[in-house]
Length: 458
Image 1 (cartoon, helix red, strand yellow):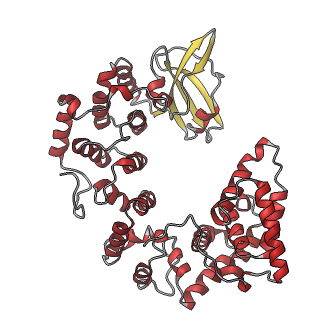
Image 2: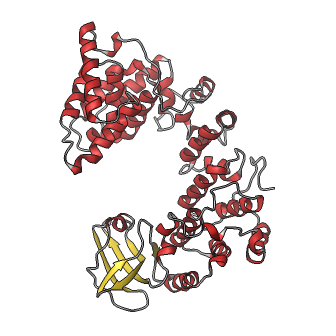
Image 3: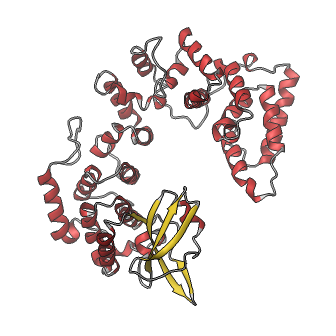
């Protein structure tokens, strides 16, 4: 069985198992490669690379450099010519910010070349693998709908190019591959793809997220092993908290007792700050002079030991830019659990970064401001009112700023507010009440309930 207790699972599945799965995929027809043709070419699937390459599209070579600032077509993959100044849509610029060469489907009409399709990631390649990729894509273009799923699944096992593997996965997933509970054989196939040596962390995360929709099992190798990957642990932890908090809590406590897995458990410490047993066990291994890490900061923020409070206080007041990541993690934790013992430090954090070109307009900065407003700090309320008043609500280029500001205050301050006008009215009324009471600092106000959008482990 592919699902079962997985504490001892190997990172690379046995070769014989992979061979069996491949044989079933190639010769087993619809039993294993079941994707229903009726689901193909859904609206979502039409926004994929593999859909866009269909006739009459031709593949052009797009060269990108300097994070997409310099981008141009250099010709067609079959040797034909295309104007270098052919328009590159904005969504394509965003999806080709990584320096390199890309294959982009284009078509000619009325003497003008246009990019086919929309919103997908084009296939990135190097010159050595171009011929093989083009041959594979040519086969895809000539497939009959009923043969697509089988051929695409087989290609996922055989293709070395990660960008092409992502394009294949995108096509299958948007075609409804994970929209229902899948069979045991399908679960075995996707587990094998996850552990395939050619699968990047990005593809693994996509598999994990898609499987989580309708096929989550807490002891599945896909989810357990994702917790053991530093790049995937955070996303996996959030899935566990949403799907099975009890299993996740017990697993993290168990791993904290293991010298081999203790560091892995700490990767999700931010999701465990509301569990006193985990916090106690984790901080038992922390020494006063230990170097602060992103994993330790959330635990220190919830500790009631004086030396831990002093460490976080010193951190939040520090102006050293090299400690910014640690400061943001501390601020995030304090906001989430609504720890009212750090008002002075959070005010200092706001003051230290109020002129920082990036931080002062960041979502996290707005969350800290909302946290102080929520707890009736008059100076923070005045600052928030100034920010709201400064938003020019008629300019299109202000949409991002409005969105970040409002999202932060909806999350931390009041989830019922959705416009600058509503927020402005609420803050003015709050400031009036605070001034009437003569209380202008958080220390004068009783602690309120934690924010609503916090993962609480029970």
